Length: 336
Image (tube, rainbow, N blue to C red; front, side, top):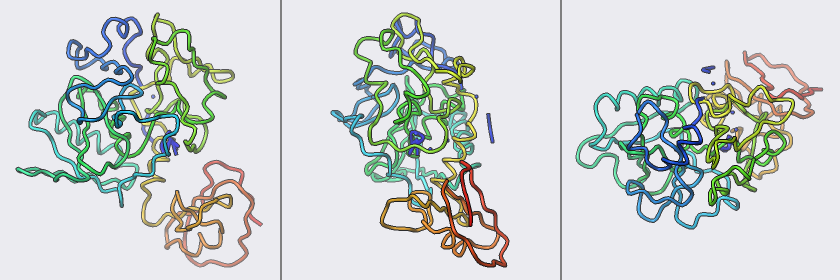
């Protein structure tokens, strides 16, 4: 899903690519030598920089996972933050100005979803468990979703708010867009141009979910030259979407689907979700555990709320006297 859920699931606006391929060839992993106004290059697969937790490594350029993690077989992210509340603390190496920049990037997500960032200070910060520790670094990286112990977000590009937003989205449970299972219908991976040993960064996660159209505009998509060995692109956008070629990998806005899917995962209290094709056991009316029946969704929606309906045929005979909105963002809904 976005590659959340990429529910690798997708209004602010576009995303700047990572560094040009030539710089990746000569400077991969050397962000300390770069300007903070130029995106730090993605790190090689399996990197273990000093500022990530012991026993972890980097995959996909900026994701912190346990050493030995198998991306292809990973269970899809479901480790979201309960009620959208994220406890965090700053390392002492984060300046006052950069703390303001981080809070501003957090506000981008809070403006579109029910996400609340709770800052902790003092000697003990937010403790040892379920705590996001934000620190100044030579790289940009984060774990995906809520971790049991204290987790780290490293930031180098403090002046580029949508790079920070990208790492925050990882912490909220989102992976990369081009890892979703339908990826090869929309883009072609140019394996011959990928740096030797970095091919795993382009794996499809077989257990991934997906929601909505493939989002070339997502702030969670790779750039067209990421991990290039020779200055040639590593991702080619397939027809009829070639106009997106130079725009994938943007880091200057949240796409419509970035915002919508984040708002679904961390939804507002008066929203309910209906999916007649839902195959799970529990039905709570949430995005991940929706009602199968449209009637159930309507009856549980508070006055002024919204029912989000997935494609399918539904029965909804009845009369309702409460104001509400019915939305079908993917279309394909028939109500008899």
